Image (cartoon, rainbow, N blue to C red):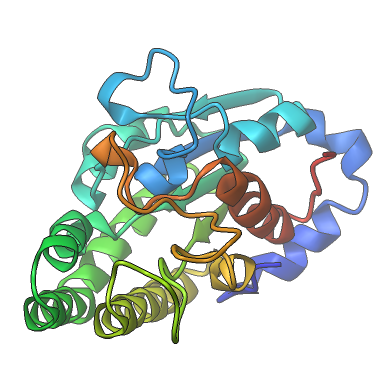
Length: 263
């Protein structure tokens, strides 16, 4: 399970969901965030267009299993905190009782980092990763604070679960097109991003769920990878596949919410 942190809300959530069978159908759930929240990479995107919002993402899987009273999925591939604040938060209502969000990777240039590391030298990759880590430390915290505050303002009674990002690659020796130097740098960036997000979630009094433990052993270049390598549809590259959403993100979300979906 992902380890929820930063939360007065986690213990309260556990108490509030002890009688889940009698109360879960009253949940008003809104899913916010970027491509990792949207399930980009998991296929079955329906009419979501460039947002690549998958029916196999953790949010619709949880909703299908738990039948909330309402469910709005406004996640979108490529989203930044500005996109959440500029439109996604409009889905939040006074009676919204549950919110999930994964955001921040695009604010620090995730796509540019992966492009550089895929096509460039070890040193160019390391340099690009260091730029992203600096952005995560210096500019991302304020953006996250503003985003979380707006969510609380619009839905003050909601339980807010913030999900992190997995390490994309397996560490150590592996038969992999990406060098060990690059993989080590990229995994370090994921750890830096997770640390920053967890800290801001804690400051906001929300619940953080780390997905790195779920994805351990399932990164790119493993025999049982839950994350794509380079894909013909480039938007899916380095994103969780359907197994990653079902067996990685969904359990992490369930653990934070306190409700297990039947599978």
